[in-house]
Image 1 (spheres, rainbow, N blue to C red):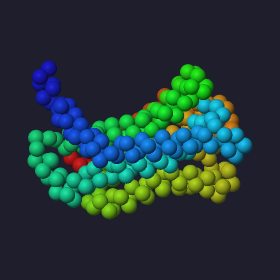
Image 2: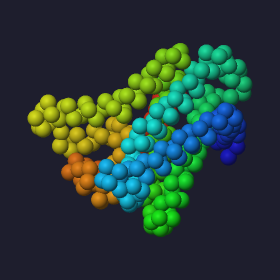
Image 3: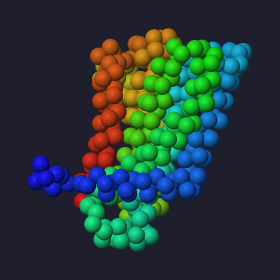
Image 4: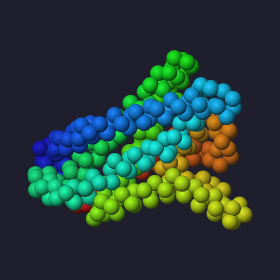
Length: 279
């Protein structure tokens, strides 16, 4: 047993120590509190005023609250995750502290994993705290039955953040300058949040509708924000019909296990690539 443990490429205590330091740094500079307040303010405003176009104020149903919040999460969470993680490694390199860290009895895998877990804890805590107040208000208005869909939405929001945090860490390892890493992080946000769906729609229109079909639907797996949208909208029948997703997403793609596996792959693959490049 001891031989097997000694062959394991990382020491959990080292990883947790580094993760705790990274998390304490974010708590000390009020980063978690600031992001949680942003989520709370925007989610309450959107839930209350989301139905104003239909002449109604206040949450109408859990389905429409989730539909309104999905757009908020798609814009805010990836941006916050990218800004949080883009300088995790390249920032240490520019400050000259990366060599000091690598001089410690710490492997590169432990260093990378410790930083990721610390940042992931800060991002997840701020996301959960930011949506907690709205969850309590929905529970009081609609009852305990809404907690299942709402908790599923909050959990998928946290997973989306972790996916973009993995991408940010990969950028941080690949770049040699913070300015380049920050520019690429913003470009990545534009690509996944604004450009990707336009490209798919453009291909569909340019081909006169001949290119696409189920292939177009499966191309959505290549974008974590589309994955997040499908996870939350397809699972609710009323929203699936309202947004036309029922005609785009085939039943084979709408399976929860497949969508969850794809999102976990978006978390693990960039992190694995970052370690491969960093070691």
